[in-house]
Length: 195
Image 1: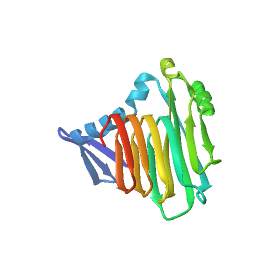
Image 2: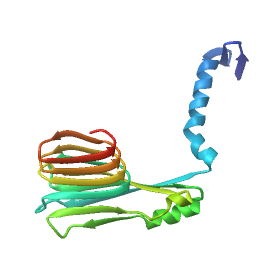
Image 3: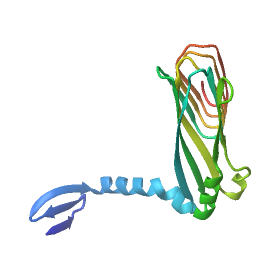
């Protein structure tokens, strides 16, 4: 039998006559506030979010670099000792109606061109959706051979690069550029964010 007693400063929960725990009103208030705030923006605004994961692996043999572009989303690229280019992405759509979000999700494409020495990856998202109250984003997490040169471009998202020996060209408008263990020639640019 569970028994709840309300005290001035805490709730006391007992099971079979033994005290299980006490929960202060302050802690209870913090827990409820955290739960409400985490889901409140979408609840109040009536927004739906749909996400989808993407994974692909390409041979880096004979290639010299990678060029990655997305309009909305973060790009993280790290070098490693392998020869495979590992591409993971999270596609996301937020908006008012679930069916419209699902339709927009089906329109998001990740275009890959391996025809040259540089592998080109572009997130192709539906155009002019912001005015309709919907947002699409594609965030990339990519592993490349450390010897690769890297070019990245995003409008709304940060750029994170680590363990890259080749040249780096990293540009974003709204987001920071973060580097760790990057040795090659660099061109870094951001408008609203730190480097």
